[in-house]
Image 1 (cartoon, helix red, strand yellow):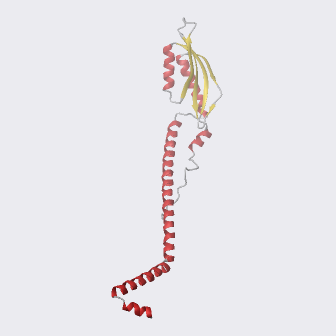
Image 2: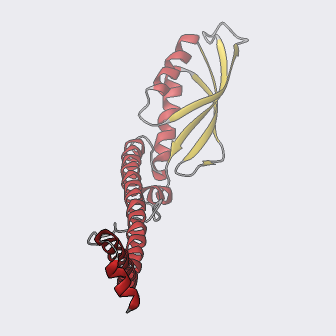
Image 3: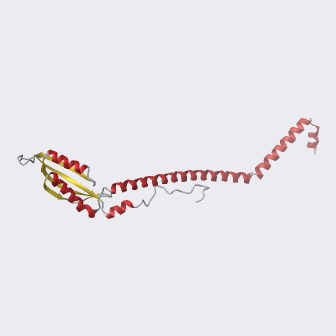
Length: 211
């Protein structure tokens, strides 16, 4: 009581300062006690929002990668369908080989036409054939040009050419090479046509979006 009377005797501006200080202390205590739970909830909410933002960003990246993968797969399927036209199936290989043999005989003197063991690749196979021919430079060039324009995929490798010992028959050169005819077996056609069973990343549903 004495202190209050003493305070009342002080100038008004000192009384105002004292009451202001007391009010500030009371307000600070009230704010700390009353808003303690609210501040904790706010901090927890901010942390959850940050986690959702990061999850949403990751989901958008995964979704973009999945879309890119689908586009690349569709492009690969289209390319494969175009190439498949040039690859005969295994059951057609005999017809193709007969056609190659007939073309060689039409331009050159066919001395050897010996199919070898097949070459296996992921989505196609190859039938290499050892070929020996005799003829003129021009006729050999015509045959190679026909192979380059052939409607099926073939290749020529291990090419050798030498002058023919007998020039009187009109066959000025002898040539040896490996002629490979490519084909696709039914199993590999099915395997190549199947869509991929795995994706580069599983696209998560962005936060806040409906699945």
